[in-house]
Image 1 (cartoon, chains in turn yellow, green):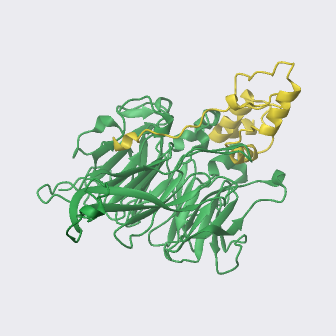
Image 2 (tube, each protein chain N blue to C red; image 1 turned 60 degrees about the vertical axis):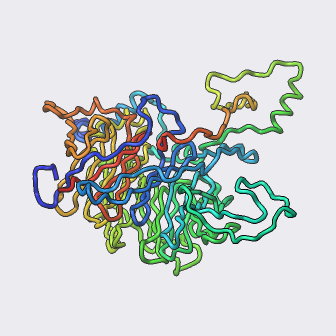
Image 3 (cartoon, helix red, strand yellow; image 1 turned 180 degrees about the vertical axis):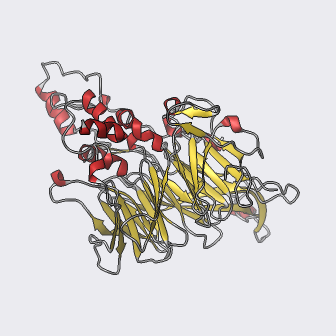
Length: 99
Length: 447
């Protein structure tokens, strides 16, 4: 009864309970470390030309696994291809603030 | 402060808005940094597309004494381009994370702009005259046949339409493995620091091929990583002192005279937490997104997800002032975590006299806290408040229960309309507030 009281009294705890109810597998680690690693990994695309060419050579007769719905998520089975990487074009247009 | 009177209360009025009107925002147009220069005459913005736009305040019109000069476009240039680091399979965004102005030493203006990996020193100079009357060249640049030259003349400078040119003078590259979050120019005006998630480097403005590492918090084993550097700044007066904030809500003050590598802090600022209040969200919302020294150098301000804290540099145990920005969000943390808003990095700023602090919130609201009167105000950056010299109406969010007229309920707030970047003119009551893709300028109503 005490714990329940405390959860309603402290909005953060109530929110935490909500979150854990939705995502029971949420790690025991406090909400910090996973995000730190994600933050450090930002921008990682994992296109490796060596892997890519070796995979191409090995799989000449087989079909290459196609990119899944989320092209940015790289799994162990999928070798990213240059086509999977979003095009990085520089902004040739002037900023609208200067318009 | 609510506009109800009082000699010192500021009455904020809409002055200008820059940027496109349409709701469909191109990613490149998202404003990522806003900064006044030291005199306040120039206002720079950086965006996700790697572009910098500089506005200049018009000279005050003697006849129109009821308003200060307007800001108009002075210069615009592409500061950074997208890159791909093939060796590390790393995409490098061109987004400008920070702009910092150098104090003006001569006719030209200098600023530092940085993306995740590379810092650049830009020179912005004016050209308002050009040489005319060359002996060997025509006015259009074609060379004259020397045999046709029968007399000699001395070329003279003639006035021309003002041209503002931006040129990159230094490129400080390849010194950061992780993503740069801060740059700060030292009060010696010769050196500056750049901070990424795990390291801080010291540069000399003239030297691009090397920098000194002054802070390194990278653990030997990355599995042991528990906190990252979120912001860093040099002290405004003491050239040996700087601070850096962390994702765990701590601020460390370092003295470069103590040792070459400042891994051991001189002071550690941390507010003790009540362990019984700890939740899954505690660490995330305690992460400091911005740290700014007061102009006096006596205080520093930190911004975490829900509050702004003022620290006295002489007291490490707790802040001297705490201001709640949007406490009503505490009971919404679950959904703010799910939509990633809990990771939004709000900045904060001081007014010129260090008496008022300002920071942004959601729904295009921004907040100001008067440290002397202890009053606060919520204002909105919106095109609906477009009439110059009409005082902005204060806003109020209704946390729960009966919503009064003119109040907005928490559930109606638009969390996509975030004000992350604001700036206050160093001398006047003029503020620049960036919404997603528009820049608003507000001014004190002058009598």
